Amino acid sequence: MNILRAVRTRVPVLRAAQGSVRQAHTESKIHKSKRLWVIVPAVAFLGVYTYVSKGTEDEPVVFDDWVVGALGAFPTRALSRLWGAVNEIDLPVALRKPLLGAYASIFGCNLEEAADGDLEHYSNLQKFFGRDLRDGVRPLSPVELVSPADCRVLHFGTLSTNGRVDQVKGISYSLEALLGLSPSPRPGNKLFHIVLYLAPGDYHNFHSPADWQSAVLRHFPGPLFSVSPAAARKIAGLFSVNERVVLQGSWKHGTFSFVAVGAYNVGSIHIDSAPSLRTNEATPRKVEQDLSFQYAKGQKIGGFRLGSTVVLVFEAPESFHFDVTPGQRLRYGEQLGSLGSTHP
Image (cartoon, rainbow, N blue to C red; front, top):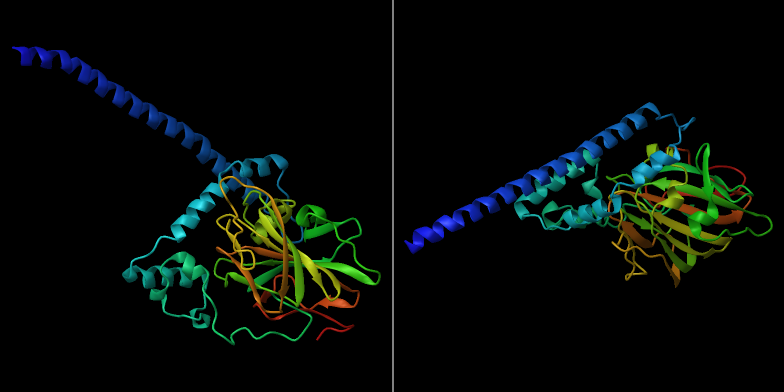
């Protein structure tokens, strides 16, 4: 009788608990559904907005500030950290060739240039992204300035006297915002700049484009917008807003700056001469530190964790000229610019 009495008293309690669990589960589903009803239309709207305002290379259509704000509200930094964690998950040996081979095929990776062409030797995606090249596959041009990466030329030219840098035709941003300072050229010299885009299938490391000496490293935290050519035509000041690492120094002609710009899914920027540097952290902080390092032309500086962008800003005599064209594909070590009155 005591057992029956205990059961009768506990059954209503258990039923009430079960009801509370069901209610909480239902409320959770409703909450998630509400979030989806907010996020999905927002993403769809931004997609439609992007399509109808896509513009052209000659006439870029810049996003309004509220659209950039909406894009910035998405957790691109957290998602990039998540993607980085996924990339570092070790793959079973049996899956390495099919998965990494599929990636290489989709993005056009040239495995014949890799120092190690056996995909089974790359334990995860991150190791594959950071693969080294075989010796001799990237001969260095003897000119003043060579390409620091396998990349596509987005934009280049001289800097205007008002301290503005052209992002693409019709869109510019502040040089001081990009570098953290606004250098002035010596008499008879000019400031030049070039923007180079690394696609996901490109070799991901970047190298020194010239013989030069770094003096200071600056790390600027920021959002991680896409840095694709399409995004560069839509987000004003993109390269001076995104998270980036600036190496500031000099070469034989004057000031020289190397800027590695992060991007969505590319929050991690590695600098070999600053192994303690950490980018895209959950608690971002600006870093400025002395970094005296002598770089030789072609020497590896660091790498991205997927494709991104390199911006060079440097001083040179007025006779300097770029030997490239917008949209041109380059491999690291190829001719970028030289001194002289005529092009080669």
